[in-house]
Image (cartoon, rainbow, N blue to C red; front, side, top):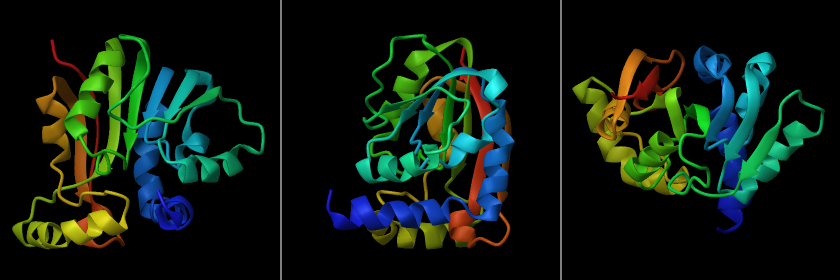
Length: 208
């Protein structure tokens, strides 16, 4: 992947994804995880300290970037009351059996997956009946002026930010593959540029 993607980009992403407004958004969804959890795009392990250990059986942390996993392992030096197993594959390739997961967690990840629909189909496949998809993602803003900025910047932004799309319609993507959104909150995060700060948080289940 090269020096930039394996050494520099993980630090940049970790810094950007752990700002106070972003952490407050993460805290809305991560503690709601329960049972066997698949965290797609576990990245540098920012969410690990936000889980409620008493609710968790096991975490499969899916992360294809060796640089991000290396960065995350620094957070695991101190003992954590969680069973975490790394899966070094992209979101489009989830190596788990059908119906084996209670919770799928997406936090600032769907924007970076090349084939987001294929990845979401994999998440739908591994989710148990009655299981939940929890998400906290930035994406396409509702305001036309902000959208124009997102669309203009997106080609360059993707190259610099590890494939991150500024303008993905997150909830549309989730619903198109067979999920039903049962709760959601969409807003601009304070103290962030509006073109990166429009955030979707919510819960989805398999559509009947």
